[in-house]
Image (tube, rainbow, N blue to C red; front, side):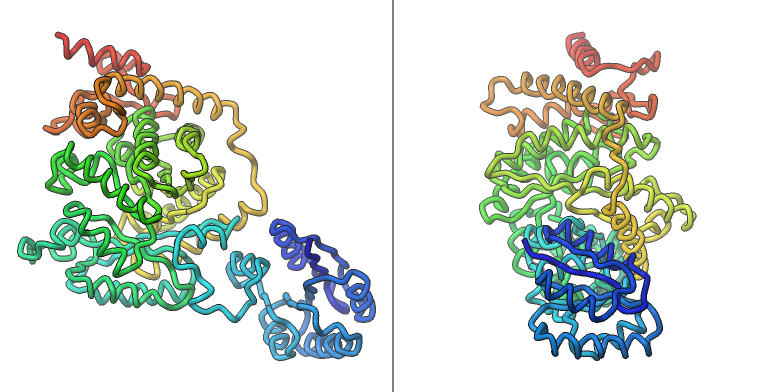
Amino acid sequence: MATILGGALGEDVHVAGIMNFLRLAEAQGYRTEFLGPAVPLEDFIGAIRETDPEIVAVGYRLTPETGEAILKDFKAAVVEAGLSHKRYCFGGTPPVAGRARQIGLFEAVFTGEEPLENVIMYLKGQKSGTRTAADYPTELVPRLQGKAPFPVIRHHFGLPADSIEPTVEGIRRIAEAEVLDVISLGPDQDAQENFFHLERCEPSRKGAGGVPVRSEDDFRALYAASRRGNYPLLRSYSGTNDLLRYAPMLRATINNAWCATSTFWFNVLDRRGPIPLEESIAEHFRLMAWHGERGIPVEGNESHHWELRDGHDAVAVVASYISAYAAKKMGVRDYIAPYMFNSPPQLSDQMDLAKMLAKAEMAEALEDSGFRCYRQTRTGLLSYPVDPDYAKGQLAASVYLQMAMHPNIVHVVASCEADHAAKPEDVIESCKIARRVIQNSLYGMPDLTADPAIKQRKQELISEAEVLLQAIRNLGSDTPDPLVDPATLARAVRIGLLDAPHLKGNPHAAGLVTAKIVNGANCAVDPASGRVLSEAERINWLASRQNA
């Protein structure tokens, strides 16, 4: 086990920075030795000889002039003692750090201004100040591994405009800010539906909902803009038409970091695409398989679409499970399971976390040597107030709750989204807010998952989900595997096994369920009495309607 020796040099008694550094080092598997505050130069040199550490961490936070003098003396003593072959790093205030860099002894200099993950990357063997494109993984899983325990940060970006240029410039600014790892491109609606049929594009809706990419060169220009700063990964919506043409194009142009696809959505059901429901489900599964064959991760962009339509908690858990189950069956090895909190926004934090833990437990029960789930959390878009100050508070509070799940990816949603599409400065600011919350959480937070009410609700939802899943299996009992049979799944939507209040009047769904927030949870209720219905009762009610 490698050893790091650290202490505050000379007359400096400030040790908080050194202590934080040593705690991070221990989390990365180092053995640490702390010398304490105000360590005389000769004692520091003696400790290096005695301890024989791989890395020596020196702290000094007083005036730059005295700092420069004592650090020069320290370097001279190191050379005289024959210890210059050791690795040395320094931590101090920005003015002192500037002098330390000029000494020529320290391979890394930290001021507290750098992102926490930069310190972690150094502890994992990457020397500070020497990072190039080659130091940043171009695929998701290595990026996750390199940043752990700090989660990968993702943010959506795509400016509605007449051209791609504002988005190109925005990506440059975001990449140079080094505050996120994944830029999720948001193409406009025509780019998603008519990219291969430009004659169908309507000039009047150019830029509606995102950046108006119209060619492969447009995608390449967006990717080129990201090749700076911390070289963030790029990914994009999978489109709502020609999905299996879209996928290889995205991989070739922006090295699409992962595929985000659905099971039931982005078709006639939500009017975001022209494909009939059953056909769309089959195409989504083929899209999963295409990425699975190539070892590209897949995100199941599914359950929150039910929640955004006020779908009750049991349906959300089942939709999450079906997505993970289908991904595994389609050969996906690395599955990104999304957990959108605050959806609907009236949920209590207790019941919200319980629902997400139920989803995670069920999805992760599918894991084996060939299938791995990664947790991706995010703030619910509809939870943001328009007032910018309140919205920032909501962002911070939501991210803190999300950290109870120890996510691998945090999908930051800009606090401005209730008012306007995020501009580069909004993305950067919101990522900074989230990163501070994450950093504080990693130092240690209460175990919210131990709350008895949360545990009880989680188990209730898992039991309710099993009842609904069995009903879907019964519906397709004449098929080899009902949970990946497009006809069975489409029928489950049509008859209301999978349903949401906002689907009322939708010709492709039942739209029969009534949902209500009860004790902080979103429950299916009897429309006449308001009494909470179990899934068994709701399924029996549906059956009685069909038989009437």
